[in-house]
Image (cartoon, rainbow, N blue to C red; front, side, top):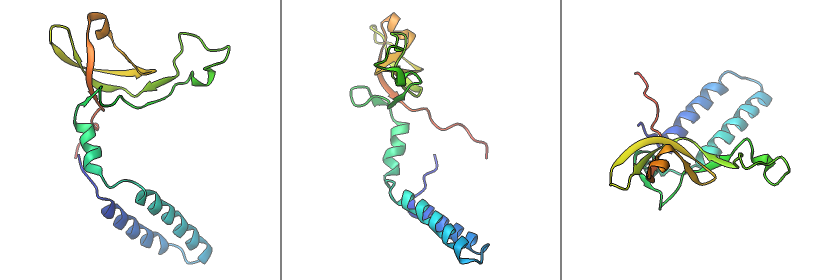
Length: 144
């Protein structure tokens, strides 16, 4: 996985700003271009530089005792607490992740699944399997 430093990205944006400004002569347009690049630079500056840790989190297995995948509102969330809510609906769902499942006999397997309202959705539970760790999917393969 390629890692970019914040400084490298900021230098590239500055070069792009200078190239873009050469395309415009009038001050109002140049002001707008500068404003846009200022916003981009501020947003990037506000990001953490700690990319190796962020990257390692994609590469390492995360024990479920340490952290669960982040969940986002489901399409049903807006009906929670209304007469439209049903027990078949769920409020939150995570993206699909890779999990390590451990069975009572100690066998471990890897599979893909997700959480719904903080609970793992998988067939392995029926067979006595328990999710012990997870990690996000790696980036898709890209040809050079």
